[in-house]
Image (cartoon, rainbow, N blue to C red; front, side):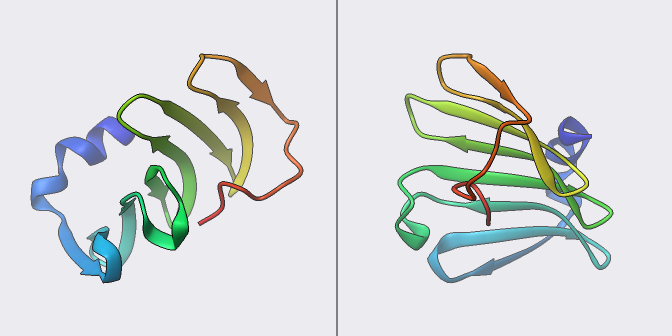
Length: 98
């Protein structure tokens, strides 16, 4: 799904708000949100992917690091950090919420 969204970015409607945040939509559904570093004091870039208005994947990255966040029914169930270490079903804080 994520790859299909990325391939179709040119055909999606783009809305930009303060700080360079971009929303990519198809009709009334948000498919992707891009949040550049510095927004809300967060030092990483963030890309969030949605299907039927439900978050399913997040990418949190800088030039040197990448973190993958996997969601099911809006809840994070897997996290892979920049070292490739995976954590699953162990999340108690909301550091990566929108």
